[in-house]
Image 1: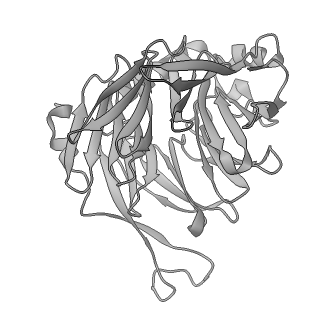
Image 2 (image 1 turned 90 degrees about the horizontal axis):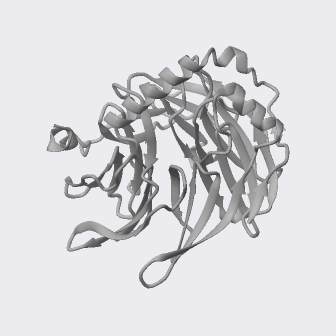
Image 3 (image 1 turned 30 degrees about the vertical axis):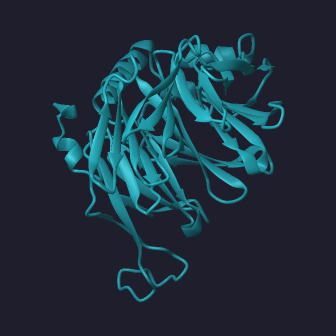
Length: 376
């Protein structure tokens, strides 16, 4: 088990005073976000078959894309469910603010509760993921990362990482921006590069996946939620953030070969969902009600799709059938077809290196979810 107690690299563009006005503003924002989360769809995962899991407050919604059927597991947890991970078509795992991890198994066509890890962390859980066939890895606001090894009837835990910024300059930064920097929001496992990347409130920590030893880190990257990591190519990853209190967002580009951030770009909205189409060299970024398309060759925005949803977009995912799905606080899950226009299309730019993208509502759009009694 390792502990981070030393200084990380500070992003030079940080300017706290312009981003955060006072404590009341921070409090009002947090209260607003709680209301937004409670009413809308928060997270999204896809089974190998293409079937979908969507999370809403304490509930799990499972949508069979082939038969247009919905299974709702009501009150699956006692508090917000923030993350789900899928092992295979018959098994998935969830974690919650109720401090528990739960595994679910498919029996007779329905998903049922399998095992419960109560009090998995001492503070809210933010992510859980299958680490191997018999192991689950989790993180939480307590600054801990744990591996849970399955035995016959339960799971046994081992602590592999504990963050402690206290007593450093990072603690002073935390006091200024009303955040606990020790909170772990996400982690990402990059097996081919042997990297384990941790997202804190406004900080990134890069570890060696083999021994969980510290490699590099940054703080002062964001003032609000750290979002998602997506591979752009073999070396580069894009990381999206809600950036400032003025509703701007931010994308940073991380080089895995150099273990450092090499580029930053601002977005016109808080980023709350991101998808990388590596073969098309396109980054799809969601925020508010719009979607922004970015060329990953030069990291320039070439198109913004307006009012894709009626409320904030929270996740964007690529399904197994090549379709794209988005979820939003407007309580809708939409499935889109992605069409690349050929060189002869009149709408295509004369520049043959540019790719034109258009989103169309697919026939399988999930209107039925709006009609279900889940939302009554």
